Image (cartoon, rainbow, N blue to C red; front, side, top):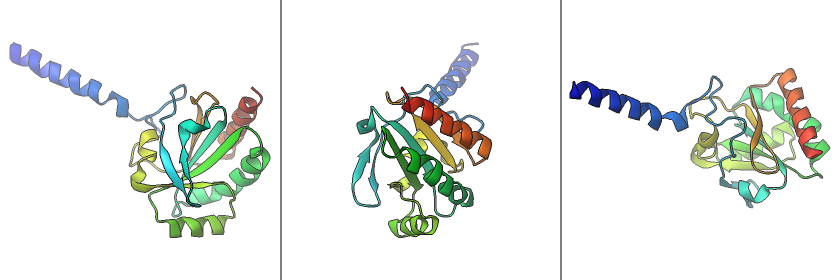
Length: 174
């Protein structure tokens, strides 16, 4: 009997220990309402960025990679419909490139024509704070001025993209 209780305790312990990394159906390990996990990265221009330094701004993180066709399809819409419209407000937008050398990232920037900043996510350290490592990169996370996650997308469809734009615009009015 004590052996069975011990085994049950181990199973329960393993279940609870894995809860922080449990993913949702879209691969996220964070959820709306969570404080956005902090990180520090280098941008392609050599400057560094710490997410916690952006409190007081609405922040959009666009997780991407040069090899991701869906990401490349979404980037011009992010550039025109979000970045160009809000860049002079209390808004920050950063593409977070998944573990690629700067040369590949610079080619992607040139090919897509984006002007918003791109961060280098060496070893996928930032990505894995937000999503399961094996889940896809086409995703956006919107963070409010207090640092809480208020919206998340996966893949690219116009309906979800338009809803995200409305969330950003509403948050900027606060």
